[in-house]
Each structure stands twice: as C-alpha cells, then as structure tokens.
Image 1 (cartoon, rainbow, N blue to C red):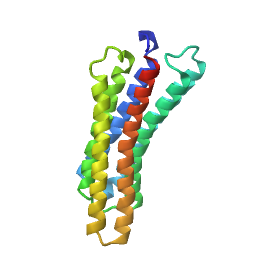
Image 2: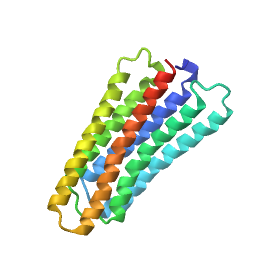
Image 3: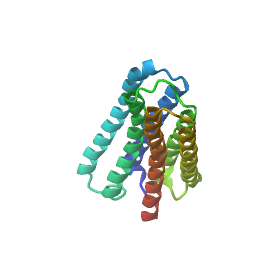
Image 4: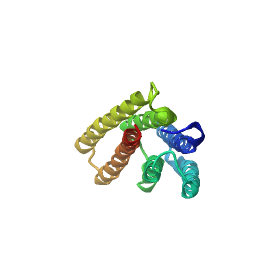
Length: 207
C-alpha cells in the first residue's frame, strides 16, 4: 500500500486515533468517578484533546494539498481523516450533553458503554498501526473483527439500557436526557465501526 517514506499519512491516522483513545480513557475515568461539579474542568480537558486532534488533521490536509503523489487516493485520505476525527468529536459530545442536561447522578450502564468505547478506540489505534503493512500484517484483520464485535456489544447495551430506562424511570426529564445520552454513547460505537469499515475499503482498493 505504502512505501516506508510515504508513511506520513498512516502515521498521522494512528496519531489521530491515539487522540480518540485518550478521549475515551478520559471519558471512562470521568464516569467511573462521576462528580457533576467537576464536569466543566473535565470538559476543558476533553476539549484540549479534541483541539489537538483537529490541529493534526488540518496539518495533514495542508500537506495533502501540496502532495504530488500520495500513497493512496486523496479522496480516501480526506474521508478517512474525517471518520477518525468524528470518533473524538463524538466522545467529547458525551461530556457536553451530560453538562447541558445537568446530569447529577450516573446510571451504571453508562460506565459499561464507556468501557466498550475505550476498547474500541484502542483497537482502532492498533489497527491503524498495521495499515501500511496490510498485506503482511498478522493482527490487522483481528483488530477490525474486534471493532465490529464491540459495535455489536454497544448495540446490545443500547437496547438493554433504553428498555430499563423506559420501564423503571418515571421522571420525563430524566427519560429525555438519558435517551439522548444513550443515543450519543451508541453513536460513539458506530463511529468506531465506521473507521474500521473505511479501513477495509482502502485495503480492498489497494490490494
């Protein structure tokens, strides 16, 4: 797929996914030790991660404009970079919604979601490291399969969490708030799978 000297884009994808992984770790830490009074400070910390990810993407786009012959099609680089960035954005959105909805008490299944998201982001990071050597990699396919399985786990969590919410919760404001939060958590899992799907498309086009 790419000669060694052309690994810049693949290295940048990996770095972008390391930011997503950092964001997922922070999210899990926030939820495991949830304190609504600390949300503003935690949002600032999360936004710093997201900002650094954005800067990385902008730097790559600036280089791509001047690149004579990128290792893969420009359109694939642009689309893949957007899907990578979407993961970090979505994780950040979880904390934003918790703050906006004034969530003062955490539902336990939110932590289960955070764990799935963290594992998915780490699997994406491992996958990206193997992309330049996709023809010889012994772990790339297993990382993609793992991400797909984690998305399915996220779907199961989503169904169970909403069922429990609508059968046990009586407060309509809580129902509305947590429905939106569960939607965002499940969306994070979908975004992870989207990156893996895009990686598979790139591999197929370059095989």
